[in-house]
Image (cartoon, rainbow, N blue to C red; front, side):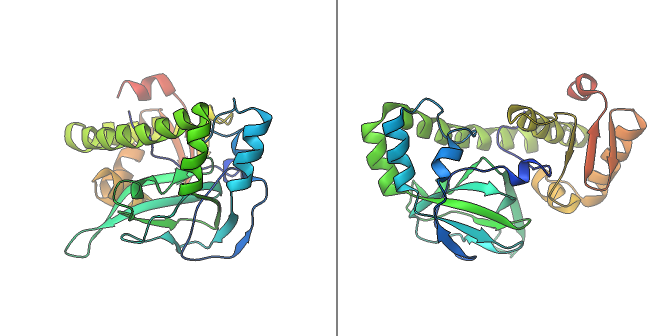
Length: 255
């Protein structure tokens, strides 16, 4: 299924993490983001005390991003990566005709900005879908520390590998799955991410709109709504607005 897509529930939205460089929002001194991120999915939990202190020293600041504002824009110069401390984001690219294509959703504990490593410019917009905060990790300093810490280097490589897997998973999702399978895969992916962070795998809130979900999945809003209605009729899912409860996880996985 998908590897990267995500959404936060109320608890996850306030979970702390590690960080980057932004185009909007208040800029604040770093608040020991690294210490938090060591306990998150972003960074390794195996760094020793000296490595942890060094990592903490390169986290330059935290930044608040209001709903609808951008963390960075396509073609912005790449300088930092960002760990989401709270809230959630969508990444977006623009078609030549001006249409918006959602390429992913990201929540607290995830890292944004790795798309800029290759060309030294970001390839997408990162837009907050709720009031959010990030920590800022200057990439040059992170590279320098990776040269000194094999464990950190391995984790950064894993994150980059995850981006490759995400892209290939998206191609499979949009190219080979039915509408019903796409929505099921979307919900199962979010469920597994919640479980990995110690939260309920069965009950959570979707932060994105149904329209944004459909945009990501390559489906019309009406089709997304129809799939949710079908899952409810089949006893697989209960939906109340953005609140989701997966009733039969195994059966949903067999869709």
